[in-house]
Length: 125
Image 1 (cartoon, rainbow, N blue to C red):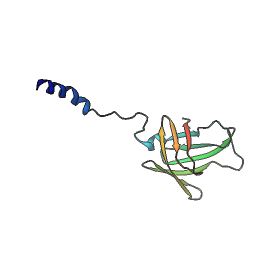
Image 2 (cartoon, rainbow, N blue to C red):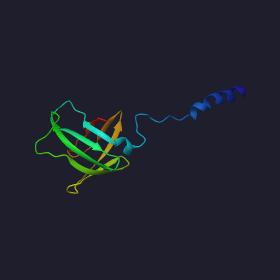
Image 3 (tube, rainbow, N blue to C red):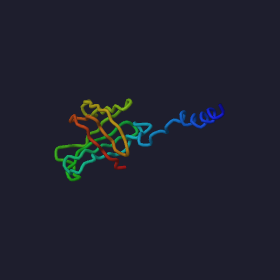
Image 4 (cartoon, helix red, strand yellow):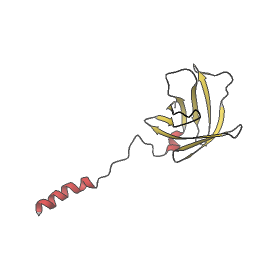
């Protein structure tokens, strides 16, 4: 009987030990989103840039070889997060777009934004 009790005393701490938080998963996606992001690509053609500010405003633009593309303007928007869903509302015309997103290992991933394909961004600051 003593062996069973000793065995249980040794095993029980391992059974009831929980895993710690995964450090790759941000605790607050909204807070993690704040900052400047640039498309994570090897191309210099049509590279997307986003800035998310803490007051829920932001802007986006597209560059070729680090120069704003002719005919494009820096577009201002307001943004909101609910769970892992991000919604942007264009300040100029009120149009909106939504996507689910994640941030892991310093990479922001939009699941299906605008073009219907996933897109990754790296933090600039």
